View 1 (cartoon, helix red, strand yellow):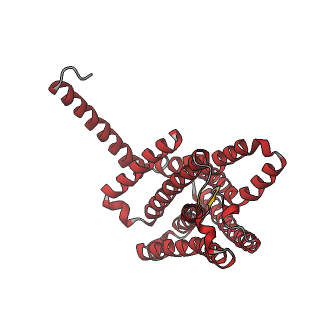
View 2: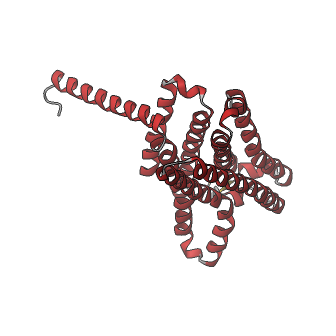
View 3: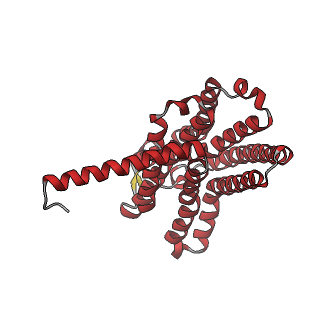
Length: 295
């Protein structure tokens, strides 16, 4: 809960910084960045809520679990696709700078976001449709432990998701590999400073780690189920470890890569944070003057 609170404050300050400055509205990079921030904040909130519910209530109504699980799946699958879109944007800006304004504009960016939403919403919708057909209506009124495998129990759903996730992850991995290799080659060819090459290499490394951790979300359910079947007495501990590795740690990397490392966004973001801290200090001093007993 503490990690969720810290990340929520960071993500909220980034969204507020984006809203306060119109120059970010005109840049496809920042539009995709803020979409990823909002998506990660929603995803982190949902999976944290699911995790807390699993400890407190153990079992909840299947209909409520279905809504939470489907939204969590949607936001989880969106992050790698947004990363791929941002990689393509960086590839075009570095390798085709003269055509950047034509290829990367606001309408195309919004269209890409809509396509990402359609691609990520399709699997959970089909899971629900198959479950409605296969399960009796009373199933959604029963109480279950809120887990994807216990909610969507039909075997065809498992095979369908394996095919989709394999195709999906292959596309994202190949896109990132190709774009970042081209970016590195271009950076080494035109750069006269080793600092810029090192910076590009570090960015590639951070992206690779973030994508790897995000992709674990698609293989973890099978691995987690296998480990729990082997060590049933450690079921909660296994779930907790995978929860930290797959859903918590990757959400720390997005602010670091795009918030701290981007000079323009960092300038406005730190200015907002300093102004907010100064305002809180003034309010606290004013409160102490009005009420001397308040410390």
